[in-house]
Image 1: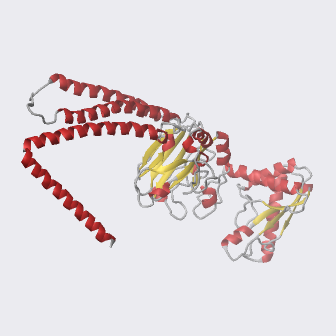
Image 2: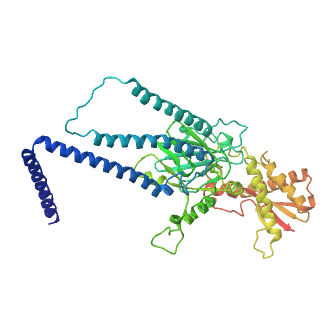
Amino acid sequence: MTYLITFAIIFLLAVIVIQIGKLTELAASIRGEEVVDRSSTNTQGIALIVFMIVFLVGCVWSTLYYKNQMLGYGPLTSASAHGFELDSLFNVTLFFTGIVFVITHVLLFWYGYKYRQTSGRKAIFFAHDTKLEMIWTVVPAVVMTYLVANGLITWNNIFPTLTEDDNYLEIEATGYQFAWDIRYPGADGKLGNKDFRLIDLASNSLGIDWSDEASVDDVVLGGTDKILLPKDSLIKVRITAKDVLHNFYLPHFRVKMDAVPGIPTSFIFTPVKTTQEFREQLRAYPEWQTPADPADPTGPKKWETFEYELACAELCGNGHYSMRRIVEVVTREEFDTWLAGQKSFYTTNIRNTSTDPYKGTKLFDYEIKARSRELKSDISSYLKDTTGTASRNIQLKHVFFETASATLSDLSRHELENLNKLLKEFPALKIELSGHTDNVGDAVSNLELSKRRAESVRTFLLQLGADPARLSYNGYGQNQPLESNDTEEGREKNRRTELRIISK
């Protein structure tokens, strides 16, 4: 029934339009074509003037009404150092183009009124006017030259040439359908190499080259992790894509650069306002004092829930919207603390696996330092424990032996040197060094091997100057497994050296 009524209304409107047309033709035939044309053009001319006034007033009104919601105006000033210069460039461009916009539209509609058809008026034709051509050629050329030169200066300021002597943080953003992977350098401050031929969707989706030692401490944030940036720090973003064209867009920082598969791009900027500082800036405006959730009028205000964001400014597919990521700007101290607490992708996903090129052959400085802190913490926890819950058995994680041998590998010296320092730091500490094996082979042989390995550890410590009265050793063979010996992973964990605190 609804469709029938809609069709009937459309049909009646069509009939009315046709009848109006016939009435117009009839009036024209009665009054004369010339009279009707002059009346029509006069009406159109007046209508054009009215439309011009309404249109220009509407443009000015809407600009003033929405200015606080536009980037660069009201509370939405730049959150990056270069953004102020970029906003100024846009304002200069808007000034000149705004003048042209107003003049051309005034002339467009005014000429439509002024040169409407009237009786007794004749058109004047002239083939050439050098003065007029010079005006509309020279003036735009001068203005365009100024705008282009000003733009080039701004562009060069935004993209300085960085050298190794410059102090900057380089991060990497890799776009794909439909997320961003963000990679931070570790303690060395360098991002490791990548090679698309190394991409493994299961274990290395970015194709990071683990043979490059700069890669092993790199931190990779997943698709939903919040991106942290330090305030007042120069940041270079290395931008790339794995599948289609994306766009790295940080609107509040005036950062926008395409992410192109196979062609790395970059952007350089310096955040100058933390997230909290920008919220305080928004707080002063009434429109940001309204509830963030209209359904919860007593909940947080809009300014309290504001977040910087990373968006993809390309229509990269149906899931394009899901590439939005939260960006938080914090102080440099907060950022350094956060980054120090992040574990590298290599450590959590690659280390000591079949794809690790350094398995059993190398320990990195960050691992040695981290293990030193961990070992001290484990011993200190037991020494300070008053509840009897702390374990007195501590595994020496970086003590290695040659296969089926009691000969220590060179990698073991780091762990044992750290242990020797702790023995000096805690002079009352007495420990037992214990060796353990898996169940492969003869139980008696395993027991003997575990004793010899524990003895080798004690001998190494004695060579470092440890007090022999504070060190004892024993072997337990395969009798105290930590995991099942039915798997290779379990057997690897069972082959270990421990220290047992005897007295403190």
